[in-house]
Amino acid sequence: MQIDQKALNETLRRVFLRLHHPAEIILTCVRWYVAYPLSLRQIEEMMAERGVEVDHATIHRWAIKMLPVLVTVCRRRKRPVGKSWRMDETYIKVAGQWKYLYRAVDKSGATVDFLLRAKRDHAAARTCFERAIGLHDVPEKVAVDKSGSNKAAIVSIQADTGLAITLRQSKCLNNIVEQDHRAVKRVTRPMLEFKNFRCARILIAGIETMHMIRKSQLGDIKDRGSSAANQFYSLAF
Image (cartoon, rainbow, N blue to C red):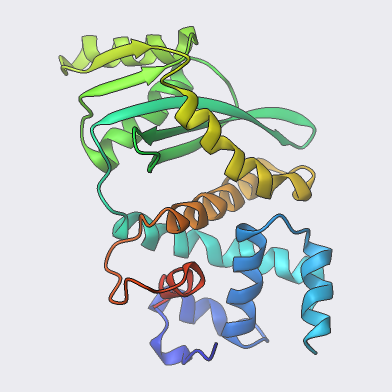
């Protein structure tokens, strides 16, 4: 992959000016980190085999700098989702403590939205749900498991706004989102645990972005046969 840095979006071009490796090497390392269950040291070794000397800590810094820009572009280009959602949360360890990744998908499995929160409660669930509505408008139906906080969040939104949302509590219906958690957890596992909340949010957003690309959720693709890798790189332009 050869990248013309003049073609990069303005924000990334400013970032690359402060870095000392070619853009294609940086973007490749960042993509590998969020696309596959690889540790930073494994990526360091893989690049060394290709004649590129880069420290694992440097790759981590690249990811923290690059991913917020790429994630923002992905959110703008994301395809619309269906009107029947499944919402659930899963555990993510950050600095030795369990945090909660709230996630929602539609009935076909397309990612609606995600949000890492420090607590598992009504406020966290409501924030996630309101953000998803802001991104994709109001759903017709929402399925949750037996979690009282998720139900309370939706009921409170219904009461405050008068939105006509059908709420269903069903473990069976929520299997779709519970199975979808696995794709994200598979990539986070080799990372062992995140050192701080900020890094966790950035890296998880990158993992979710790559996961959405694999599910063909990125719009404005000129070549429909474009690989997931090329679609990821297209976020930089």
